[in-house]
Image 1 (cartoon, rainbow, N blue to C red):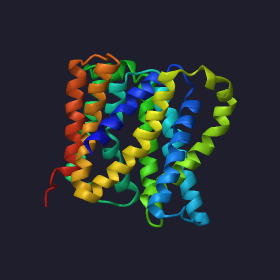
Image 2 (cartoon, rainbow, N blue to C red):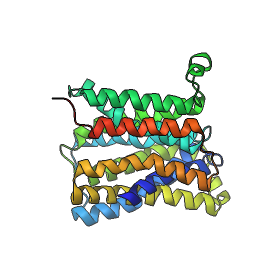
Image 3 (cartoon, rainbow, N blue to C red):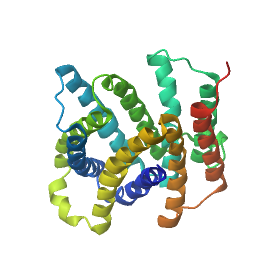
Image 4 (tube, rainbow, N blue to C red):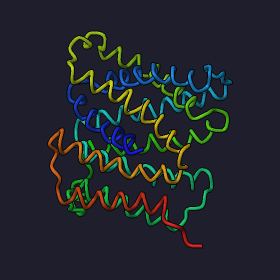
Length: 287
């Protein structure tokens, strides 16, 4: 689970390394072409076959592919063209909070006090990071394009998670992830083709291909597989706590690999975000 958190933190570094040199459609397509290749074999190993799904499940899989694969990765790679990896990781770290909020709206789940506290802490932390510690500047200058795009990742992943709750009723987690990855890859193929992916493949060097393989295999396939292995060993609550290490690993890796600075506002914001995620998921709510 610790390695999973490191792998997921590393996706921001890999994404930041290829975002300036690859268009987002091609980067997303190649990432999930690699991921889908391995996910199909992993599904065959676990399920012993590729499970058949009905028409309703096909629609759900397509929606998962559009939100969690297509939209999320377009926002991800385009956003990382504009802002640092450490900032992006802290914004996306607010995902669990907004998933809880969306669950309260769409599934009538009770929004307990600890969730409200977590939401406030995490949003405050994200705003501290975005504004470099000057919260008032957000009102006078607004959000930058990179920050808005990364918030698009949050909206996409919340949508993916809400739709995924429907999918879990009839599909196993590995089947859902495999089929949605394949669907998202198919959706990304045409825009990647229109952006000249076939003519650019020979221009990518070892750094670009290594980053894509990392994103597809380590950040997607192995990260997912080990996370669910961890859930089976120690349970979902204890396993979920390791998600708090994702932005921490991203910040550490971005400092050593990308030489991104560790500013006071970044560290303070990280503390707020991580405290918010912890409070929302693990702080015992009042009876």
